[in-house]
Length: 186
View 1 (cartoon, rainbow, N blue to C red):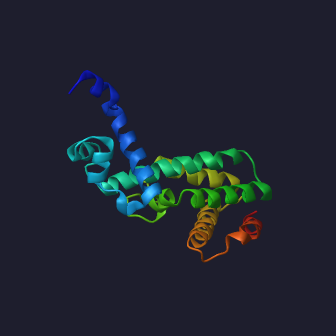
View 2: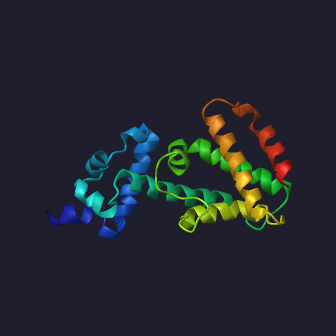
């Protein structure tokens, strides 16, 4: 291998990020069925054993890593509401959540629908997911049952996003849906 070839490749510490980014890109462009260890290895220019060094469980571990980046991105998107409360903050957060899900369908699928060994509401819950949950919980902090209310709020948002994505709820009524949901949780 030429030294110039070596310089063009990511350092070992960056390989995981490159693998996750490429998996995410392929999934967004072609769907998750196109994301295989073989395809990723070819797209990045590494052998399959190199991918398995970073993700010993293979594809499911890669999907879990992609989902963690999605939860971090969702937290960042919701972060604008930090420190705010009230109806308008809930409406804005709900809109942000649903728009995020609709703008990143493959990422959202990895976060919530694909087998990825990501656990929710447990000690093993990845911190990225905890941070995203806490961003919503902050908006509902005035309640004695904030955790349960946050789970219900998140579940309702997930339902709206999934049903809209699948064409079962008209997107044109999103604002009305979100406004009513926010009223229920204020």
